[in-house]
Amino acid sequence: MPLTGQQIAKLADIIDQQLSPQALELIATDLGVNLNNLVPGASVKTWAFKLIETLNGRMPPEDGLLLSKLSSHANSVLRAAALELLKPTFLSPTGDPHDAIVLGRTAFVARETLRGRLKEFTNPSPYTTRVLVVRGDEPGGKSYSWEFLRHLAFACVGANALRLRLKNTNYTPRQFLEQAYHLLLLNTSTLPALSDDPQLAKIEPLINDFKGVLASLQNRYWLVIDDLNEANVTPSIREAAYAIAYAVEETKPDRLWVALLGYNEPIIDSDLRHIALDDAEFPGPAFVAKHLELIAQTTGRPLASGRAREIADLLFTKYPKLTREAMSQLTVSVEKMGEKIRMGQQP
Image (cartoon, rainbow, N blue to C red; front, top):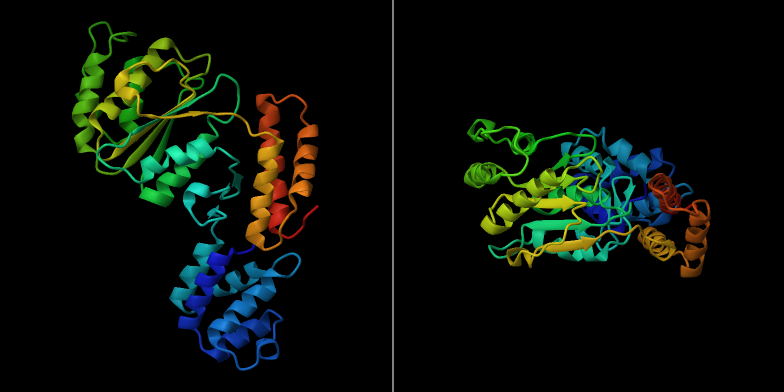
């Protein structure tokens, strides 16, 4: 994929610091670019910008060839920089991870409410919420939120994002807590045995133990409990997930945040009135059009809003009914279209 403006500036700075004019000129010649003809006698930094700009402007863009060459260079600093840029990371029109529109190769469209509320997670204080609830009865991106949570946990706070899926499981509340303990590297031997295990309703002893071991967490974690709206998830498991979230919001531990995906029960406890709430909804054509416009902006080749809407409408006409399967296929289509636009292949 073509480098963004910020990535180009960073790479040009590194090349300026690490290469002589002769070394850069040799690399450029190997890539079919005569820098001395383009900008005679310029500085290494100017040459580096011109080289990347020239490669970026080819159809398709060929800045990847430069990165591949630098990734095997004898200079370890250049090697590390190139290898980092070759990894699929995220694309943000502002550079802010909260505004990311592509995560690796996964499109993340719209969701402005979610983006805003998660700024409390990434800039925490002793008083900010530690709980996010993403709701929605219909298929519409609740589990899709996991990708964005994982991205922000890594990009902003260096936390480990852990996903506890409940679809096609048959956990008792104690087994559910055990799974959470395993993910958080907590000792399950402290969990008390229930008198009529597996007990389905009274989980206070389990939650009290959970509160007691939170101080022993060695790392920062975002625990994402997913699939709470699935048919196989029993009320007792939803109650247990809610109880975990309540305990975390009550104690506000330094190293744990919890997200409940698909928890659609009313939240009436006043102690949870400040948690982050998001109603997931699959983005319509207008949001997809804006997404494609933003991708085009990062390439320096703008896409007119009218044309972006035409493309989005065309993508949606293939899926007149947005079933779960259709949304999955449509997401892939949006991603492929975004990749074409980033490669300069505007339809």
